[in-house]
Length: 265
Image (cartoon, one colour):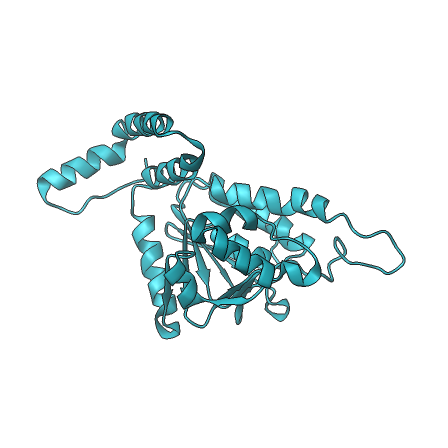
């Protein structure tokens, strides 16, 4: 597939997916969604890839849905578009794919992340933002509610009071405050942002990939489990990982007092 709305490249074990509509603040349209599906299919299928970095081109990360796109464009006098159908067809599968990807994911938030763009970042395993970046739940300004998983991610990350404030008041949240509240992993100086993202991607690309993904799965399952159920899930994953090549290598490296060489298997 030829990409026009995103850039996708693989260097070594690191895949980089860049939303590439800078003139529209990387807002979503139907074509971008189709290209994202294709790129994520490649990440899922290419076993040499061990981490995905998701970022935006230009001065913004993602401004959410492009309201001029034909799928959602409102024409006075005509039947309003089915916004629920747009969520079911595009945003729901995108978020579920990211949450179930076979490699860890990093959202590198280089500028404003608004609406669905904010939720897109929160769907990644680690979110790192430049200090000039910000997060905005703008839905109430147009008579909608946070979608793309926003009503699920926000209360779990920052608690109900702050989640309600962000959603109802539609105020901008700075990257530094987002990190302070626990919404994201870290906010770093703009001058250090690119190097920090690169170092984090390298670290995850050489880590025991399967163990990282099982960690994600276990943590996501925990809120719906009793302690007994969670302990059983942990036991099952530990059984699987205990028979993995990476565990064998990790133990050998620990005993031999050397750095491990994980293969993701």
